[in-house]
Length: 274
Image 1: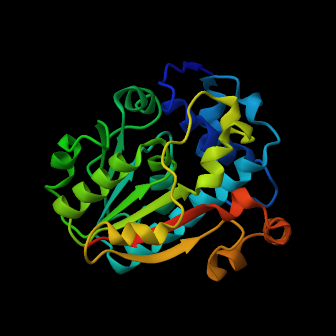
Image 2: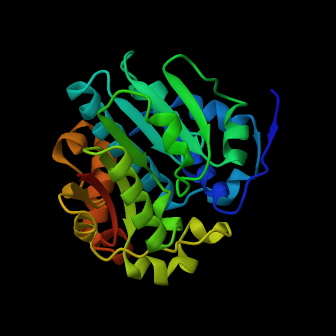
Image 3: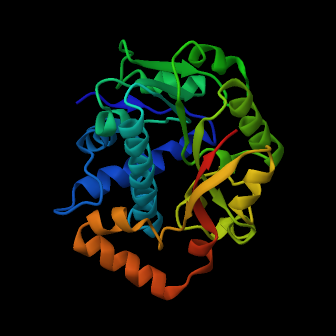
């Protein structure tokens, strides 16, 4: 099997964490998320993934990805011909998991990530890769010619930006794609202050920059914005929780019982933009 070299920037390297988490999960007899493509990609990349072995955050990244999958599936059920934009797509295989055969899809990430991504994925009539920074409004031109409504998935991206940059992203999406849904994750100040002890992030050089004490604050940034849902990893939506294998449900129940500060401070949020 051909091994692909990884030449990524500091923050971009973090895309390998959820990729590996999904590959590891796929090997389990009863996975929370089935993703054979992720396992294939990991096997063909020249990178020392062993640094992330046996770290609890790998399973957390799988739960986050699964919740985003649920939100997008619900969106496409309501809007079968809508448009999904993956902000900081990395090597995510969400299109392969939830595409309904009718949606329009954009995979947005920095040029070095898109270069790597093209080793494994190709553009198609309904799916387009876009190289650019989410903080640069140029990417919006590639998306704006498509029909809405729009769902923007910013998974494991915005925490690495400054708050002013996060606000700029929210402003840009609101102005160019009014009425959109935005899914994002955020860390409370406790996580940001203690990130050097983070089980996985401590293995790479990238660091969180945006501390969000309460995701409800995002709704105050734009008049008319609303937080539709916000969850911690130990308090997932009941419909998603009940669909997980029993071993996964037990792990989450045990996690909730421990009342860990870093778990309570990390949130997955769905926002309706004005």
